[in-house]
Amino acid sequence: MEKIISLCKQRGFIYPGSEIYGGLQNSWDYGPLGVELKNNIKNLWWQRFVSSRDDIVGIDAALIMNPKVWEASGHISEFNDPLVECKKCHERFRADHLEKNKCLNCGGEITESKQFNMMFRTYLGPVDDGENQVYLRPETAQAIFVDFKNVLQTSRQTLPFGIAQMGKAFRNEITPGNFIFRTREFEQMEIEYFIKEEDWEKHFDKWAKEMHEWIQSVGIDKKKIHELDVPKDELAHYSKKTIDFEFDFPFGRDELYGLAYRTDFDLKNHEKNSGENTKYRDQESGEEFWPHVIEPSLGVDRTVLAVLCSAYHEEDDRVVLKLKPEIAPYKAAVFPLMRNKPELVELAQKIYKDLREKFVIAWDDRGNIGKRYYSQDQIGTPFCITIDFDSLDDDTVTVRDRDSMKQERISIAELEAYLRDKSQYLSTSIYVQTN
Ligand code: GAP
Image 1: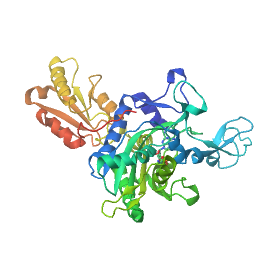
Image 2 (image 1 turned 120 degrees about the horizontal axis):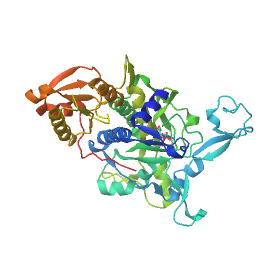
Image 3 (image 1 turned 180 degrees about the vertical axis):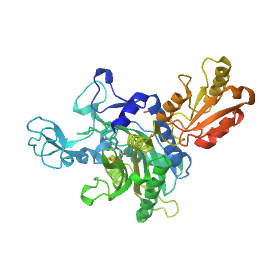
Image 4 (image 1 turned 90 degrees about the vertical axis):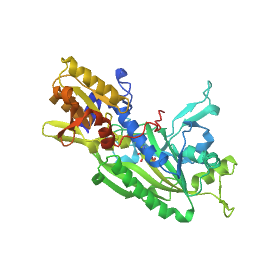
C-alpha cells in the first residue's frame, strides 16, 4: 500500500488534500493523471450502464436536498455508527472496528458506545439556526427515488427499468483511513433498478452477474473478489438482502461494492412523507403500485484503488501499471528519438498534435528512450511511439507495447486506427460529470 500511495503522489495521481497546510484528515486530491483515470472509469461505467442501454436513464441531482428527504429515507434516525471514546487518550473509534474492548491507540479503557449520525450538517442561507439546517447527501441513491415520478413522466420507461446517478456523497466517518478507501467525501456510481416484487430474485442474480462483468471490464483482479452475503442483523435499515463484493486490498479484505434489494422501502416512505403519489401505473392493467428496487452501488474511489492495486506490478527492473488501455490516463506517449534533431522533433510534434485531437497523449523528449519507457510504464501508458531516422524516409514509427515490451513498426497513417482498435477508445460524446 505504501508503494502505491508513494507512486500516486510522485506521478500525479493522488495527493494529500490541503497539503501545504498540513493536510486535512484523510482528504485526498486527484492530480492530472488521477483525474484522467477517474474520469475514464466513470465514463466507462456511464457508457456501459446508461448510454448503451435502452432500459436505464441517468440524472444529475442537487447535492443538498430538502431535509425531509432524509427523514423519509430513514437516514436521520438510522444512519448511525456506534462511537466509543478512549477514557485515557480520548481517541474515538467505531465500536465495530475494535476486536477487543480496548483503545487501538494506547490500550486504554473505552466508554460505552453511543450512536453517532454520519450525515454532514450545514446551513442554507446566512442564518445558521436549526430552521435552516440541511445535509450533504450521504448517498446518490435518494435523489433517484425523489425524482422517480418526474423521470417516469419524461422518459416513457416501463418496468423493469433503471435510473442511474454518479457524483459526490459525504459521510462524517468516525475512522476514515487506508488512503482513498474510506474518506468523508467520496464519489458513488449508483443504479436503482425498478422491478415487480415477484421478480426480485431473478433481477438480483442478474445484477450480481453484471457486477462481476463490470469488475472484469475495468481491470480489477477477479481472483481478489469475494462475495459476502451480509448477515440479516447487519443489513442496512432499507435492505432485505445485500451482497458485498469484497476485494483483497493490501490492508486486508474489505467492501468494494454493494448489491442490495431495497424492496419498495424508499418510494413508499417518500409517498408517506411528501403526500405525493410515487407509485408506478401499469399501462396494461391500470394497476398502481410501488415498484421494488435492486441497487448496485459502486464507490468510484474504491474502484480507483482496486484498479491501482490490480494493475501494480514489479517486474525485474521496472514498476508497471498494467491498466486497461480504456482507462489508462494516456493512451500513448510520443517520443522523438533525439531532442536535438529538429527534423525528428518536427515530425514527432506533428504526430503528437494529430493524435492529441483524438486521444489523451503524452509527449516526452527527456533523457534516453529507456528512461522514457520506464517513466511511461509507471503511469500505465499502454503504447510508446518513437520517431527515428527511418521514420523520415519510410513514414513508419516504432510502437512499443507496455505489457509485452514488444516493438513493431507501424505506418504513421495507421497510428490512429491502431490506437483506436487497441484501446477501444470511447466516443468523445460521453458524459463527464465534475461534481
Ligand atoms: N446507496 C447505498 C449505499 O450508499 P453503501 O454500502 O453505504 O451503500 C456504497 O455505499 C458504496 O459506496 C460502497 O460499497 C463503497 O464502494 C462506497 N463507499 C461508502 N462509504 C465510503 C467511504 N466512506 N469512502 C469511500 N467510499 C465509500
